[in-house]
Every structure is written in structure tokens, then in C-alpha cells.
View 1: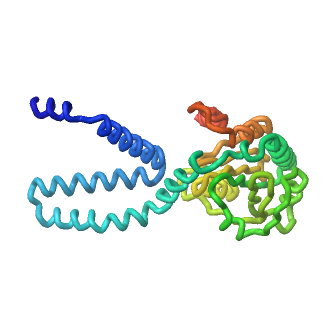
View 2: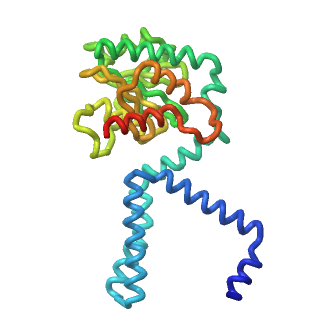
Length: 278
């Protein structure tokens, strides 16, 4: 008891601040790896660490040497295995508002016009059951994806987007990349998601949309060629069966400055969609 009393008496304000910073860092790290393969790998590493300590206490020297060696070599393995998650974490830090400005602050009133053009195009393609994949670049650059397609650098308009996805045209079978009010490229190839638990009825466009949303902070809009349904992928999650009004609201909210921790309309729609599927 005396030891604990002395410990509390010697705690300084800077020690409390130090503990809070570390706790916040661990919380943010947990939120980044939650519901990703990194979460399962972290559990595996924790189990390996516990087994190493148990084998040391029980004096299982051979087993302890093997596990201890595995933990030592594992530091390098972690950097390799967690490469996508580490990249995601660094991009998250780089996207913080301390370093960047929001799209609304840069473009102001033009956001509504851009959203209308995208929604009009998507609604038209949906009615005609013409497949489409539109990726809206945010803070994470997609130049490596742009290089796989044909550069356009044209102003966003519904007519341009519709014409790109008309069947049997040179650029219809790829993704369109949009940055702010500019169509950067079309016919681009996107990485497919590694998620093995997706529904079998999701085609290549949906898997590509999820793939690019997992590797960047971009938002991908998909129009199904079979049903004409509209879906969006964001942060590795997919929301399906959207209407034009909901899509426009998502686009308008997407770049708004953060004001509190209220869930975005994308989160609300995703929850409603999950309840529908249940």
C-alpha cells in the first residue's frame, strides 16, 4: 500500500498527459486495424508473445528458444505483412486537417454543380442499365491508377461521363478518375479487393470499387450492368441500392469540414442497408 501511495504522490501533470497521449495513440491504432486482416494478425502475435513468456516461466528451454527467435525475426516480418496497414496509417496522418484543406474550402459553391453533374450521369446510366465505375479522388493521390488509363483532363459533366461508359466504346470497360472538378482519366484498372466474404452476386466492378477504397480514401460509385442499381464503396465498405437523392447528399457531405462526430449519411445508409439484408 505504501508503494502505491508513493507512486500516486509522485505522479506529475506531465506524466498524466504522457499516459493520455499513449492511450489515444493505441486507441487510434485499434480503430485503424479494426475489422481488417491486421486485427487477426495482431491477435496471433499476442498469442505468440504469451506462449513465449509461459515457456520461459515453465523452463521449456527449447520451445522458448524457438519462440523467442521467431519473435525477433518477426519484427521484420511485421513490417512486410502490415505494409498496407502501415501505409493506411501514414496516409491517415497525412490527410489530417492540420496539413490539408477540404474540397469545400477550395472550391466553394462549385461543389453543388459538380455533384449534380455526377448524379445526373449516374442516374441516366442506371436507367439504361449501363455499367459504370466512377472513382472520386480525395486526399490520397491516384496517379499510379491514372497511368493505367487514358488521360482526359476535362471538366466534369454528365454528358462526358455518359459518353465514356456507352457500351462498345474504347473507354467504357474501366474506371473514371475524378479529382475536384476534373475528369483526370478513363479506362483505368483498379486493384480488386481481397475480401473473401463478399456476396457471389457482386461482379468485377463492385470488387474493384472496394479494392480502391481499401487502398485509399477515395469514394467509388458503381452502376450495375445487370440491374442498374447504384452502389458506393468507401473505406472498404459497400452501400448498395442507393437512389439519386441519397447519392447527391453523400457527395455533398463527403468533403464538408468535420463538425463533431455525428455519423455521415453514408454511415446511416450503410446501417440501413445492413438491416435490410438481415
